[in-house]
Image 1 (cartoon, helix red, strand yellow):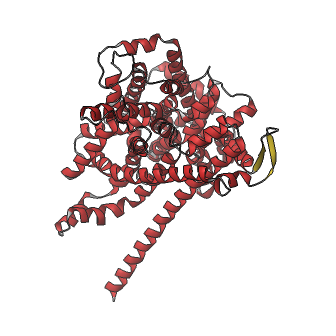
Image 2 (spheres, chains in turn orange, brown):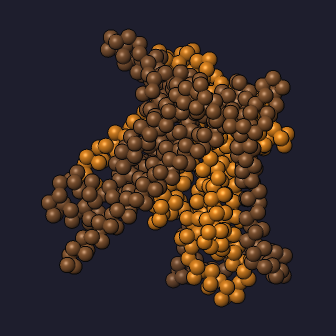
Image 3 (tube, helix red, strand yellow):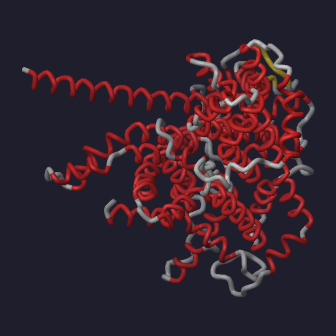
Length: 262
Length: 332
């Protein structure tokens, strides 16, 4: 790697981080309206955010929707991936293509498609329905993460377990499942945070009572950004940072990112 | 997860007795009977819940398509007969210029974003793969993943205060005596904001492709006298081509269907296809026209992906052909 490459990469990375740094600076502004540079400094935006019932409720709903969608993906996606692994050829490819429909269809299109169905089913506006929608569009992340763990499985361990007299059930529980755990964890965490920060599907599928934080932030952006919104953004940056630090240590992410075939 | 080391007696110590008893009970309850279930049934049972879940979306997409091929009776607010009129309104009828402009703007800005994102992602992916410093690798990965995971609105907010009149750009331009300027409402603003979303994604998709390139190949090219840029064009770029194509497809699809960035950084002046879909659906209340626009957007994304993939296939065949000819020439 030449110095030139490293220099370019550094500039690009700084460029991508600059808006976040600016958000961090303005989140401790003591001014009433948002302007750079801040005239006063204060931690008030962070505290005001937690005292503001509307924003706090929206933040909690976001976290709930993210967690529910991650759980749904795990419950529906893991058995599907284990079953899919035993299919071969065109059928397996077709099923996988169908299950990753959420990636193929643009979010803006999926959002209105789901809206029409939700109206028919009469579940529009429910937070659980939003979680289901987020699970549908983010399911591919779990499938890919589990698939990369499946690809790295050491089958001799399972054979050893069976040879030593463990039942297929115990072999699955004690050998197969733990070796899939890194992929499951990476996928679940990714879907959790993507769901908690998602905007496009959420803005279409929520009403005033179920609006999540990104939807509420979007609404208040129109009436002019305030330092409180910068603070709300920093909560998300912090959440993303925690998740990233958790998953960059996991082996599953290495398998996922550096997978052999693309 | 640490693998138990068989040479270490401490690791293979017996698990607690209670745990073993519980496992035994679970085995008898869930796995002991070994109900003879055909493999096909077990596979179907695993797949079915997920297929039903995704079926909700498939159903919605089918409905969208169904609405899009019907006319809209605005007076009675109900579906008219089967007709291509919605597509005509969007693409070729008189007055379709409004929608055509939006579609062309979306495609052009997406192509520009994709191109720039691929160029910028190459050094980032190279840094993450090639650096010997673990700290640098983790930092690079973190700086890529955090903007990807923090969500559209937080990203758009960051750019709003970077490019806005009250933001860093406005402050800098005023300090330089140029008046309080802003990039909000300009195509440049949307392009910059889109890049922040797309570069990390492109870099993450490129990682496996960059990893496959053997550093010895560059060394060999350099030893044989190739200049650095020639080595990059003739050695690295062809090896990265498949990764670049997948990254390009994803980058284009994601940019094409952005909503928050064009809305907030475009100041409502430069809507993309997704903004117009929302507008037709919710402001005009015309789900038939909105569905047709959604179908057109989906079609553009899928067609472009196919063109990209086809281009890669042709490139591969052409390269295979060149190699074969060279082999024949050498043999003769």
